[in-house]
Length: 170
Length: 179
Image (cartoon, rainbow over all chains, first blue to last red; front, side, top):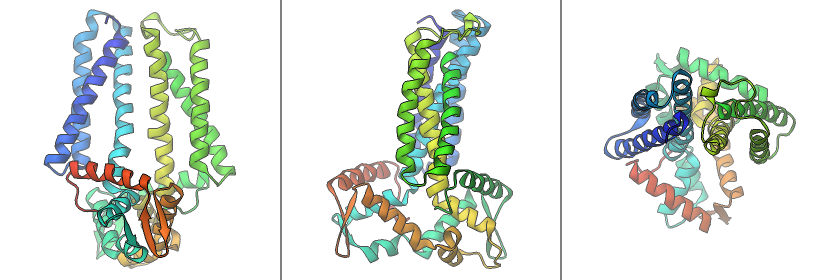
């Protein structure tokens, strides 16, 4: 293995495997969550970059180091963008949760009961609290109000929806 | 570096084509997007094969070796950009529950904005019931459930899928699903 790209590929695979193990352990033994996810990713990315800085110079010069850093960093980032949506589907998807609820009730449930469970005020309140804890909303005089960050995200996605003519959606 | 440049170029091209498709065809968007991905992946493979390793301008130090690794990397980078990037943005924009709540709150001009308001005003006034009917419709179309009078019943596919996700949720020590 004497090429910067090959070293970067192996190193990024290893560091991503470490990331996944830490994710499983973090989610199993604590609450996991977005902060853990981002800290975990940053730590493993740092581990990757340090590995490349140690191993690549023995086989390649300046351009080779640039190739290794770009190749390896991008490979890790690609793994992350494939993993994160999967994680959030498991955690928050209403369709996934509906299937699990049906399974736990012997594979079937009366439609009004299922609908009532996933259209409750409690459901919405918990989402509002989650959005507040993530910094997208704040509470003012008992009202939920978007923060600057929340407004930016809402504006960007509203523009995407308009560009793609998606309608209100949701 | 060739893999990265070709994957980025293909992703940008596919995003433009997808935008044109989405603006003109409102049905089966996700299916059309997936078909486009496979066509683009084949085009990417052909483009990789037809172009020189240095794309005619890269310094030799930026040419990734072995070449088969570069070819695989091009497909991996493109797949991640498409499925983890473009398609995820589409899913969020079209179906994101929390995102829709955020957009509703930003666009609202009413003084009372709490959980009860969201139930009624969700998705530009369509309401939370509409949201869940859309989810049920998706599960029905995907073959995960069927209706038996007023019962919602898991199919065999639904059971297998539910079992997988139940185990994943248990591994992550998530509470019993309530939304």
